[in-house]
Image 1 (cartoon, rainbow, N blue to C red):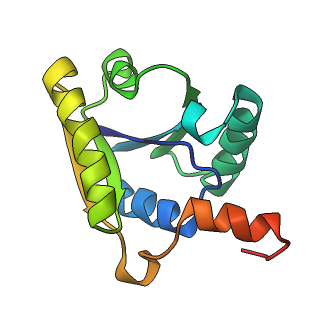
Image 2 (image 1 turned 30 degrees about the vertical axis):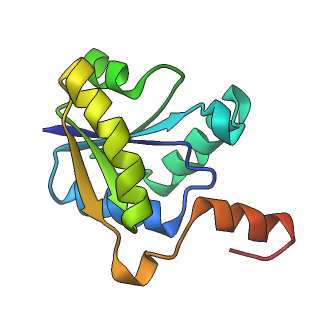
Length: 140
């Protein structure tokens, strides 16, 4: 079975890696899908750079594939014959946000989403905070 782990991953954090590593224990293939998210001001060039850096992390792991996309996530699932979407949940705000997207993906496309709770040690890890720290020269 294959699962898609979509996101802007700007940057790809240890929290994201934890979700992927745990998903690898449950699925035959984990496809990390780096999306161009206009709300987060990402672009195709930065997505390609992220894809390359994530591929380096999983070099030699045949269970992980890394792609980029600029369409609806559910369309990627259908086109690639993927079984599920997987999303990490850190808190109730994440759950509320993800539930809206999950309902649309299921209602419109028939795509199921599975949630994985963040490792308690990593639940405070956030790409937004990591980006802000990096902006001011703090090593993350």
